[in-house]
Image (cartoon, rainbow, N blue to C red; front, side):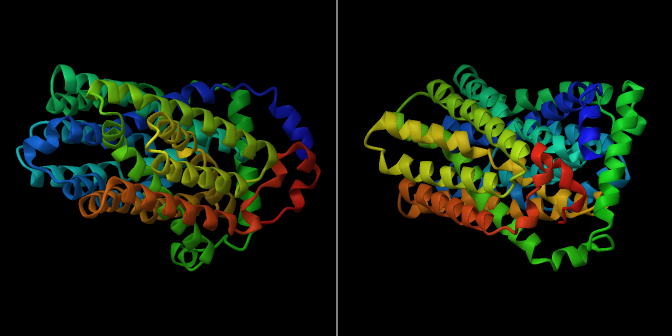
Length: 440
């Protein structure tokens, strides 16, 4: 029966790929630009004008993730029971205001307050958009859909790096925040005109695609409802050691991601002794490589149904390249190639990782589970930049980068130890005949 359904699905229109994914991706790109533009502002004059030390720069980069905690679980629940579209719409308004205000600050304490508030405003974004993706894409497509959405990280990096370097060179760091804040206003208009929360609410979708989506997603939820988690409360979910393993894995992963992302411009400037506009151009290639890595690993995972393997391998590669970027620093271009390697693996595990909650929980619980995993895991986004800043102050940049490599290695080990039930072998054609017998 599953084989027949797979063959039938090949003839179903795919309007959702063009009407849902692009506006979600663009909104996520704007959020990420607002999140990381501080990485260019610091070496671009903010640190000297406001008297910001390396440890304070790390704190300013990381405090965002303390605020990021607050709307994680509520955001996931709003997307399930209410309107993710409305939630992101109001978030875009907040991002615009806070980014523009950051361009007007006069001291480091105002910066800390605005970075914290920006974290609050962006906190519900990821669980909301991942829940919206789950509303539109069945399990066999979800890995690729998640990977395209999470592609916002490298795309935003490709846009932000040269744009930020150019704006700082031509204008200054203040205009960087003001102009990028205005982008949120433009995206708000696009968002309000395009996205729908669910297939049932969309007027633009064809009848065949709508009925196929509704039927397929209901069948998936009916299958999950028969599992042992069907009546689990959020409290019971938190009692599951696998959830805490996912939280720990995400924590060490985010430590590496944001430690690397927020310090990359400073590392490149120190390594190559280049101007900010040149640093902006050098920072593009790691994010171009990130797009290739995400497509490769998400496609391999969807094709084979192996989830934990294709979370483990990118994390291990990320850790190794981070280590090599320091050990090869006497050879500038080899070290730069290692930093590009870090970019290749930067988000390769993310799209695959976020397919796991939807396999373990029904739709209602998956929204809350994503929020918890993302909220607690993203504390690593505070620890990574701050730890690097402290280690730079006390020791050197090398010590900070080695710390990130160790964190990523721990994340890889946790991925390797994930239970086999996180895999989804039934997505592979050779497993279709036994799909109904699989268990989670």
